[in-house]
Image 1 (cartoon, rainbow, N blue to C red):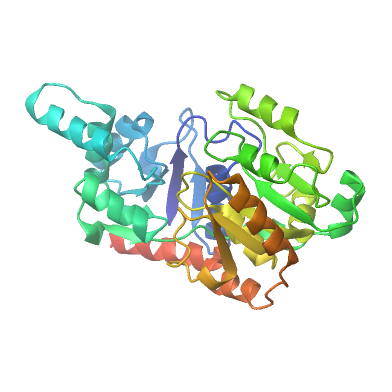
Image 2 (image 1 turned 60 degrees about the vertical axis):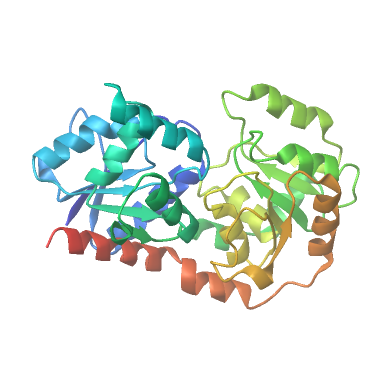
Length: 338
């Protein structure tokens, strides 16, 4: 089976990032399972040479490619990765499209979802949002979580200690710097603490000022490592040395860094937006109000002082291992090309 992998134009422009890691990790494990997964090169690849077109992250950039694939009889899978917000805008656009000769971005995305042979959501919450707001039949939507990055589970904790000149375990946040990811409130909550706080990730191109503000307000216990590649030993070392992995976003579809933190046995702290009950992680993860710096501070210190739970890595492995996730994708591919 040959699967053509496509995503939005900017997906690989940063050194790393959640969507990019998700795709690369899945492609690696599909290939391990004898599925020929191939990144789309529009100058060389012909859709007719593939059994399936798989689009990651719903976006209007791929509208014409998707229609072309369908017109020549190639099934299409969409991993939606949608933001669970702006319900009123979606409904307003649907209303306008019914009565006016216009095609808004939301109308195009609804058409793509309806045209796809299968849709993959990361959570039940995302699946319900798509079904309700884009009027998609639920039987077309499959729920598959992200797989754990295989590289992060074999790190040497001493490596990062030498880099940041600290011999204590760290609080770790991994992700692009933007207002939604909420690094600034973590910085304000943990200012001048004796606990090292490490940030991995670079600035959103549209929010450079936010990144500068984060660095300006940071204190000596805070360290910025920038973008790190998926297989960088410093990334795996940071996870290995993390006592706590925090994901304080205002909005989040999945939060792969939290799952990676669980895979290495770190204590977890996350915004209450995340469906940790659905993932079976509620007893292993402390919730925070992302707007409340006092709550963030209190919860991070509590998590740092809590003992590690030795059961968590095995739970993550059984539910979120990349091999399990790849096989779930293969099952969907197989069913739609029968």
